[in-house]
Length: 196
Image 1: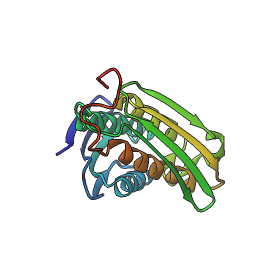
Image 2: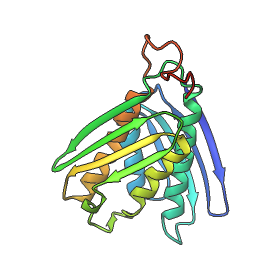
Image 3: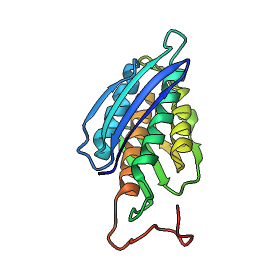
Image 4: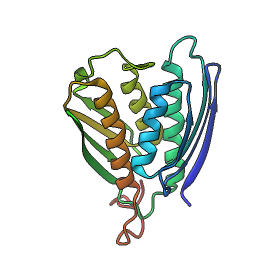
């Protein structure tokens, strides 16, 4: 079973994430930010990950620390659940439509963090529900660096910020599911170096 539980406690947040990579898409999330919970449910469902997130953060300040630290813990849990990455496809990609929005996401589970986000200016609303849309970049940047993955997004089209962000979370889940999936032809790791 490829799963992991990570807890991170700071002076600003106390967050625990459990993920099962070979799940059925179940989710139990409580971050105190309704829109973020909605996005995490979408991530779990569309990637077939079983996910539990419990976050207690300083929301009286704003949502920044909670969203960023949740992403850090999620990325760390993904990395731990992958173990030595033997047999995985390593790469994944998805072009996902949601109404007028179209988002491309590509993932490389190479162990080297890198984050690229093109088309961010299409997210024009400052808030979606109780979620500051500036935190979209912070969330995915933190996931990529704590998981040690290349993560690329291109917003190809879109005018509704909710649709764009939700398409990003769903595209990421589909791309990650592909990258995490195993291939019987890969008997060690998919790298000429012999390690990821």
